[in-house]
Image (cartoon, rainbow, N blue to C red; front, side, top):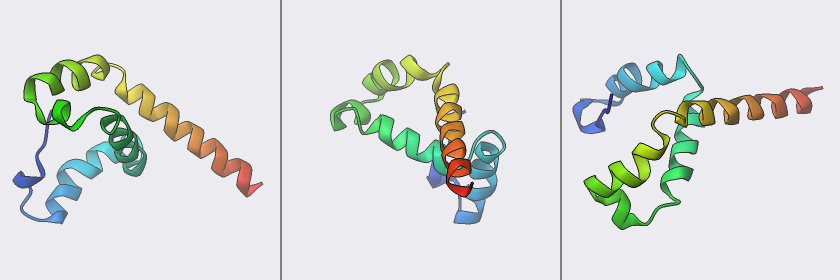
Length: 85
């Protein structure tokens, strides 16, 4: 399911339609930063090309991206626990 911020009339719609669904699985900030880091590893021309984006960016991780985000989330949670002890 792909969502476009343009379809959300205001930030509350984005929070309700997107952020809450992601937060039900992993922290949104972790998902967002992981996605940005991943996207930034590609040239702008690939990200802007619908065909190249699908083939080179989306398709290789479509079935594994959630597990990558969860791993990062668990890793950050573990580090927070270590600091709080």
